[in-house]
Length: 123
Image (cartoon, rainbow, N blue to C red; front, side):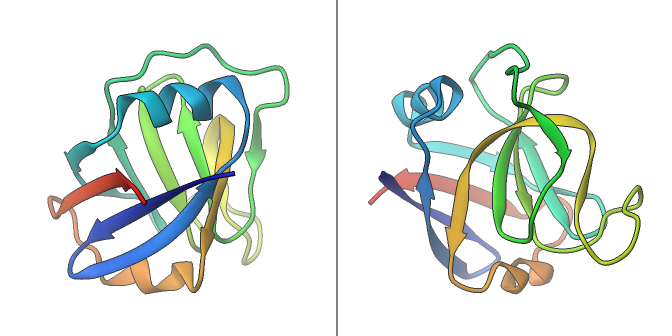
């Protein structure tokens, strides 16, 4: 698996990308910088990748999973419940392509505010 580092609000966590076609597109686009949008316990931001919804895309995700939201061309970091969650698990607004997962405590991203700079780079 390919390793990346996600940095936002003085928090830097490593993550692994899976071998999906969308994850490969994200890898090829790195490094990427953007501004965080928060939606409950999710950070998302537009990235320069355009990919269709994968056949295995899903809205129910786990804490620490990374997704690509085709509707908004956005990279998503899930670390807790969102406004459409049922219970404590994260749930995307609509299906996302699963890209990989954060290595470590993804809930640390709760310190990130709307508009904070976010960077993704290869490790």
